Length: 65
Image (tube, rainbow, N blue to C red; front, side, top):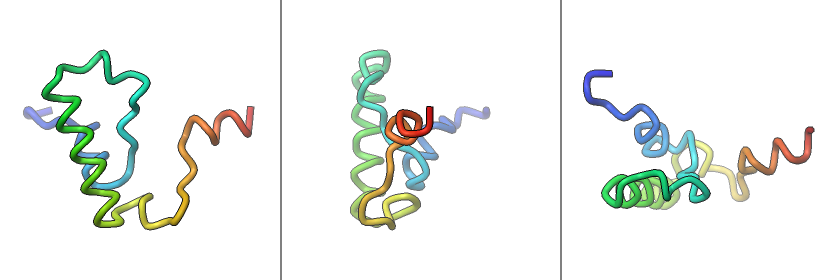
């Protein structure tokens, strides 16, 4: 999509986690970009990081299977 990484943009906005489980599938540069984006979103309390203890999607799925 015009050179935009939609997944990275979601992490930057605080609407997604950087899923560490699959980071081995990313390049070293993408791993750094995603990790930095999540750190910044957490620090700025963006999106889901507004909550004190957001529920990760993998936990949500485990609870409601």
